[in-house]
Image (cartoon, rainbow, N blue to C red):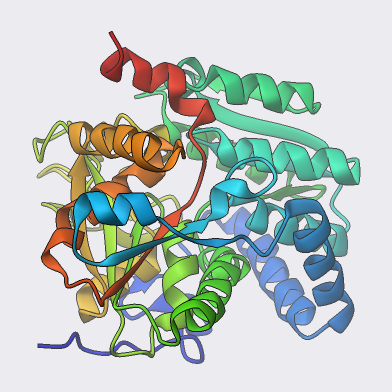
Length: 403
């Protein structure tokens, strides 16, 4: 049975930031006015040809868009079944899709007259992208990062500092992404008059899920054009990893109205669906509010946020972006998970068959390809979003994969 169709770009989110029963603005009163100011500035920017010209110019000449849609010939032969294409966001400046949103939001910060930028980061790629655009535009930059993530992503910490960013360690709680977001929000409450928060994923309070999605829609827009040029038709399946969900919603959104295109988001299964040992929100999660938005999250019977685990720092988060929660509930997008073991196997297999080392986040999507491609026929097409490159993860992965 084909999935039920969800309303798409013209209707969601609504004026209050809701995707059906998900989303909204659950923030301290101090932040309501700045969020409304940001929403207004964004609507004005969308209608301004000069804004789009500057954004498009930076995406092309600074970030390196468009990214290729690459036919993974040897990997396709290895797996059998569907023809596999990779959307090569790993080839962007800074090594991941995160630069798309960072460029868009630094231009919004300029319009708002802000002089200081803060950000949170897990795997470090959003932190690197934010530090990069702050260096480019000469703005002060502070990045909050959990100490656990700093330890396993030391290369990205060094990259941020090299570009002039201050990286502040967060040691509270689990010392990963959730705690980094908490600290960034505390900073923003105290400094909002001169500070813009470049939130890194399609989560948090309205208007951030909409803004981040829109700045990443270029992924799907390009992929749609490229697959039509290469194959003369739309893909049968899109696959992307889902932490907060920015790379996935960027790929999926331009295809939502195409009923023939299936979509699959892959969450972090960690050590398996065992409490506090995974980050797969659609596997035993529940509806709740976390860090500004109502969405699907991992919490215990008392409503307390559970600990999470993933070999991938960028997917190690207790909630999912509200638009993904809506798309899952509507049936338009399906969500599965890959364990650490499966993601590491995919990491190694792509390196061996295509000479491409993926980010561990992206390797979760590739694990989904490994599961499903052999069951499809050779005339069917898969596009997997290779959302980042794995340079940052080689040391971490080598602990598991190399003797």
